[in-house]
Length: 288
Image 1 (cartoon, rainbow, N blue to C red):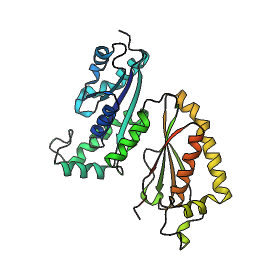
Image 2 (tube, helix red, strand yellow; image 1 turned 90 degrees about the vertical axis):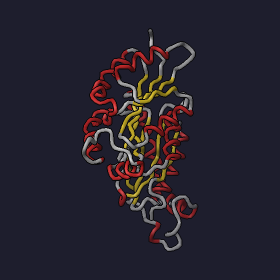
Image 3 (spheres, one colour; image 1 turned 60 degrees about the horizontal axis):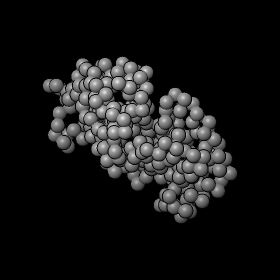
C-alpha cells in the first residue's frame, strides 16, 4: 500500500520534557496520535491508517520506554522517507535540574533509573537519544515554558497552513541566564546602549513604547534588523532544501529585559512581512 501523502510527526525527547503535552496539543489540532509505539510497528500502523481521504496527519510518540526496540527508529525513519512519507522529528528537551524536579513532584520513577537515582536515568536517556536530537527537525527546550506556552509553540509549528514555507520562533533571552539550547541562530544585542542605565527606562521593558523607541531609534539597531531579516531570508531556502521547516532565532542581551525584547519584537515584524510565520517568545522577561 502506498504511503505517499502521509504527514508523520515523531514526538520524542527526554522523559518529563513535555511529550504528553505535545501529543495532546497535536490531537486537539486534528492529528491522529499514537503513544508509545515500537518503531517496528510504525509502517503497519501507517498502512492501517492510509485510507484515502481519512487519516493523513499522524503523530507518534516514540521514546526510551521501548527499551532496545528504540534503537531501530533511525532505520525506520529512513525507510518511510524513501517511500514518500513526510517524516518530521520533534525533540523535546529540558535541563537535568528541571527534569529531576518534575519527576520528584510527580513521584514517579524515570523509566531507565532502575535501582539508581532519577539523574542516573536521565544521563542514560541522553546517551540513547543523542543521535535523534542531532537529527531532529525541531528541538523545543521546555525548561522555562509552561504548558500553555509549549502548546502555542506547537500550534505555530504544526498548523496546517501550507502557504507558509518557513516558520520561525524569535526568542529574546538574557546571556546571564544562558544561551537557549534549542537556538539555531543567536544574535547578541549587547552592542547597543543599555536602557537599564537610563533611570526613567530601567523599570520598563522592551515591550514598552519608550524602551522600544530608545532602542530602535539607533541607526545601528535599524541596520541590524534589516540585515538580519535578510540573513534569515537567505538561509531559508537552504533550510527548506534540507527538510528543515522551523528555525529558532535567539536574540540576547544582558538580562533579557530591554534590548533583546525590543529587537525580537521588531525582527518578528520584518520576518512576517517577508512571508515567514513567526512566534515571539520572551524567555527571561520578568526574571529580574
